[in-house]
Image (cartoon, rainbow, N blue to C red; front, side, top):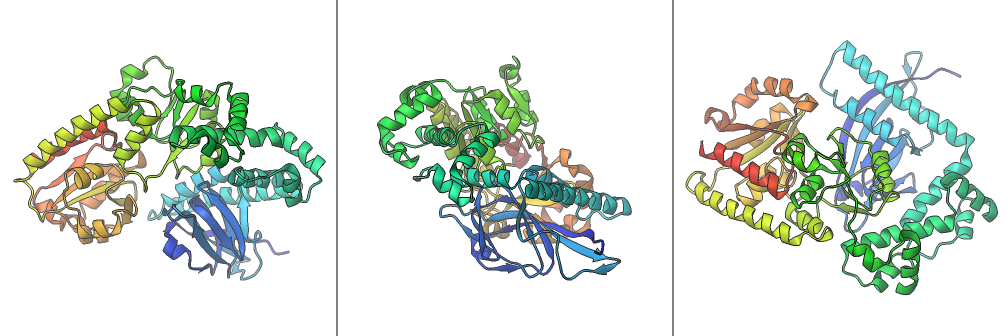
Length: 525
């Protein structure tokens, strides 16, 4: 058998919207997809894979056809890293054969693979012998992890069967499902299935299903106005009395008491952390950015909160160790499925709820509506005053552009991704460049562009945040010394302003108040 050599030819971060994703994509090379986000069905050679907003690793041989159908109500598209792989033997490209069968090839090492893909993708545009070697080295590590898991799955097919049953149950827990039915799905004897399930999970299937249903009932209690009977039906129980009995068995309290009791909260988004702290709620686990940590240092000084910085990406074990009663995160979080196994999880959509709706939603759950209305009222008054000041300062036809710069990226920011976007475009009602309105508003919070494309987004005012932790300063200096940058009207009008990334990262009312003060200083200077 000839020895094959694998080479990473190209990597890109790709987003397909539903209208495009429904069309079949045919790959003409060996391709690895690290799927970051999607909600629906992924079809590969007529076999479907359910996506529930968690990640997946998919391998496709040349000629493989793939398409994606999105769940109703989820219009965020399919986001993935696409790696094109060259397969060589003695220096000649190998046109046939393959490394794995088409379809999902890894699950347990997903998060490591995603981190490696992100590291490789960040190196795009950087060309040197050392960087090329490092890029290939990271790719080799990815292939080792996949191959290792692939070999283990061959040796332990029964464990893989239980993994697939867990994934199925999490999507169908509200249906009338039972042990014998699931055992047949994976061709196992029912008694052996029971023993194997307990060996793999540490729980009987019946107990696992009950806990899964009650976790979802807890979530519905907090987020819906449905009656207990309606919630019972939504989680797979025939009536509210049976739900109440099972609820107390699992949680130790009744559904009514659960709603009223104080809760240990884990926030795995800096935005939710900022909202909770603004409302006077101290989470037990919190992802937090430096500015918010400094702003609330007195509230956090007792050390009771486990803090995680913006660069902590795998924190499920940290959250689990804290034993929270409730978790806040966004529905794009790739480890959402794992979080839901830890505690009831409130996952909000950036595309469905604006920042104000998110804030009020959180306030209602933590019983802080009065404080929320007070903060929003104060901010609204500040905005009214600011608009009066700007009325004679900025012309009706003048435009404002927001950019963020990383080590090799220029990001055009829209109206929903922080960095002042909500303030500038929605609250102050200032005009974006035409391309920003058509390409980003109500679609996505940023778009990557090249320096050559900057003139297409020309504006009268430009606000820039530079992500220092992502190596943004050297690249920003390079861009700002270039011809494309210096051809922009805002440059020679002296209307380019650099904003602190940490201050402009969040969009809670307290952060927006500070951001508005800084923006007004720039506009009025």
